[in-house]
Length: 422
Length: 93
Image (cartoon, rainbow over all chains, first blue to last red):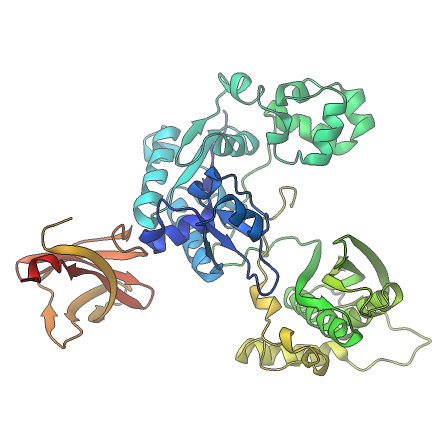
């Protein structure tokens, strides 16, 4: 028997929440955008009205304002969005325990087992959920109903806002297969380009692509994409603890990055930022009880906004802030002169190649044992857990005044999570 | 708009409530900003709902106070009502 899967997507989520909170904003072009004075001034979400002006997500605010002079720009209120997201999930949980969030605003629901309790018609359940979200939260959702997760997601993207699209075995050839291949999950600009080069333009054409081509051009992922296109994806909807954080999954790496409030032109500011980012990365690793073997950094320079990255292996796995920061700092100094002529706009620190802590640790025979940096960090973590992240800070972090009020770790939001996690 | 009412605004109010051992919260009385206390005679409905008039969302209680019924929203720790803003037109000489 086919599964019954819903994918529920809250329409222009941040903007809708703001409009639900402030009814005056309804029917007006609204965007939620980062703080301009911190140079985070890009559009995060646009309301449906703003979309009509051609405003796009990730556009700079000045571009958006040029398209729509009376645009209302709001700062993001993540706590509020999280509350709405949790409330929406609370509704979903009343229909099934198999709810898999995909970012704050999207969820898959597997209602195969509970469908008979709600009357046996998936569309009725979808309509009920949609109406309840509207009545209880004041925002709209679009829902896709299908027998696999990929087509359910396709369905929720197919018609917006406030719509329900069933993708059935009878209609998927007409709806899904005729759509541009780009609309399939995990077909981005690069994959699209490659597919276009072989005249694969619709999802249906991808579904019919021959083995030899997929193998040669894409390898394993090619077959996965074709499975998606054929509606043969059998990935289960993974239930997940509603009280846990979004990041409580199998994680491959930890990273934090920041566009600095002003261009970084001296070593002191750069060092401060590296340490702040490393601190957040290392702290999150320690919370999850893992250590990293590889540290990488990403640098975006201010003159032409081009970026590059580099990575280094640690002599042994570590979750100590000091080790992460020193590795990151060494890489940055090796690549960047850090002067007025070479301003840096954004930095990123990432720890990957994670290992679970072993019950015992192989000590080096040649080096004298190091001071227990991780233990010191754990003490600091405990202080922060009790008194907040900014209760104790490192000296280097005070070098740059504009960074002092930042709390990277607390503001860290992980979304959306990947589709391929186990 | 209803005659005599210009618009509504979200106004937080002081509420006395009872929380039972299962966590159900029952509002008992509302204290208005001028100090008047309105006893809630009966709770006619309670449901999670969004306020379409003044925005926000929470547990919405439909309460009867004397002859009047009104919505009382419980939003996190705070309570609010959709307060009436009187139409100033009929007050003018």
